[in-house]
Image (cartoon, rainbow, N blue to C red; front, side):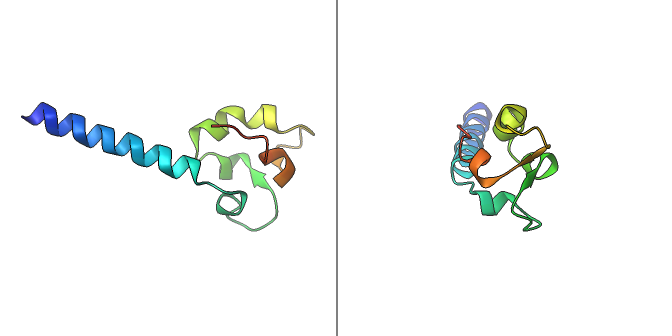
Length: 73
């Protein structure tokens, strides 16, 4: 029975994380409202962090809204 509860809890956390990740907007991530997303701000999402360097086309270590628009889950 404990295994069922553990599986259910894990599944719910996974689904919740996916829902959170898919609902992220540029404004949500730009916590200091400077119209750019830093690597620190991006770190709240594992997938965005993993893609950060590829998305940062001008290699200034910041994502503009146009660079962020290429982010894919």
